[in-house]
Image (cartoon, rainbow, N blue to C red; front, side, top):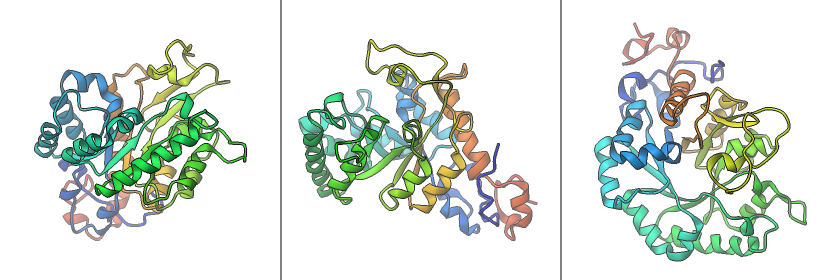
Length: 332
């Protein structure tokens, strides 16, 4: 497994993730580059069944794994105030929330009020139905709807994001991708990106190049791995319970924990730092490899700890601060 940062020459990367569970506030202040490490969040859709069974207990397990924050996909009958209190108690940053576009269109004021009460900085359009996709009859209308919603979100002191799948990489009559048209026609102060790098690659585009294309406009990045083999047939969304009735093609496509699939995760993380992203968000829509959802998300944070967050013995040997890097495995 590749080491992320041959580019980082010192182990000012030393930090005490092993002992402090990923909380950036507890990282060793003497290691200057520690503050430059992007915090890691988890999209809770990845563990939706666990969240439904034990909301608070599952949040605690997410924190114990080493995640710094969470991105919501529903509050599971908890009030916003209850969720905020849980996050405060556990020590998780309530980063953002995926909210169906239909809910935003029905009552955007309530959506904003709810997630502002939770403490979220970002509200995300997670998915759109077929008629609102590129070349769909309501695509142009959706662009204007998002502009209007984005203004309301901005006025509330929050930021609206759009989370892509692969269908936004359908070209319009002018040859432009639908996703690019959206970002070109809704100003950056009203809409930022949440690039899902799995779907960017699945669509045939380079995840790193696409992230760099939206430098300064990509505060959250979905770092997602997957495996695909042979000619892709059927509907990949059938794998996650969308587009009911479509056929799943077992073995041709599956989501994977980070480091277990086709993505160049180190390159994506390096690009996220370069373009000024604020958070890396782990997401795995469905479990694989015979693992449970909780086991999968633990594998992903463990991969990031080993390859990005924690320093190696070689790093520490070159670090002038290694004697005071609390929690560093190679500190003397």
